[in-house]
Image 1: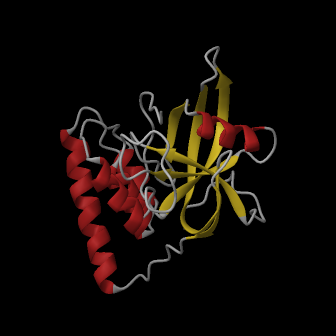
Image 2 (image 1 turned 135 degrees about the vertical axis):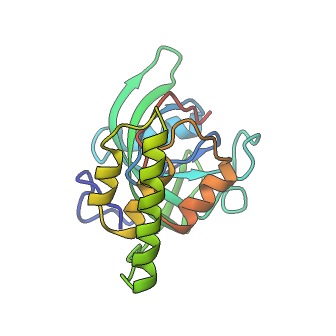
Length: 208
């Protein structure tokens, strides 16, 4: 399970939820987020003073201004920690977030004044079978080749990925470490729904 040092214990049974429409946050990912919708701002305000955790869930239709659970939001999201926070004069909030772990929404407990839900951490344990080890080896070989060919990937990217032996973390380094590739949002969410991925954030992302 992808968990960082920001993970408190025990976790609260329910947390505020922020709906995302322009990008997906993956476990282990560090990324900026510009929060502007009133309901999302209130969700961040609810945890900003102490816990500094919330759940980020992608909405199914990016054109909906105020998505309603459960039909307009995905069930799988990411538990995120607020690393930095800045309030803007126009009442928007700029955040720097770290993805901690995949979660599954178990029950929506609140729709106003902001979204809130009960959740469960997704078990991402992978049995190290011969087949899994062979797949990991293949992914690492492919990723090594990508590092050699890409001017956008640091030389030590392969070393870092290879050192993180668990299969899901290897997949992390082999997917969103490719900053020039563009994956559709539905495709990205499908990966969140199946396994944990990793990225170092670049550029600003807006949820509003």
